[in-house]
Length: 134
Image (cartoon, rainbow, N blue to C red; front, side, top):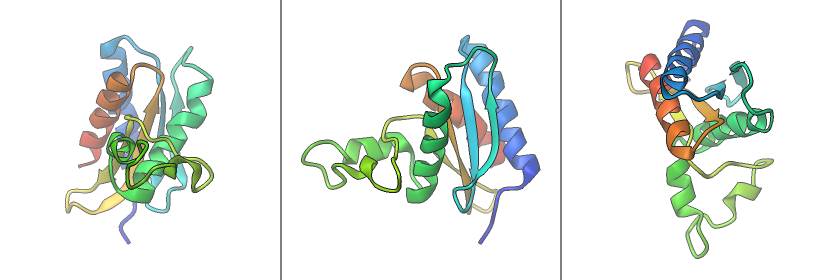
């Protein structure tokens, strides 16, 4: 199984942080490895404390299912095929801000999770981090 390197994880954090600053937001940014274990984390100065756990859970959720957390959210609405999935695996997050990380070969090597602003900004910041790994 391919796994994210230290350099890739910190590059994702660096690019995500730059995007957050460009957007004028303060974020908690988590990167997990292929096994969904925390690999790198940054809480920007004055970022919300409550977003620490959310960012880590977004990253883990994206890795567990190899899809963006916003897509899982669409499937987990009442009547949807994944309704109540957020109660599994010790708690998942099913709104935007978590993205699987793929290497240059297209292999999933981990995931990034971002929290601290609107879900739209969370997704934009996570996408910037993901792009740095690919």
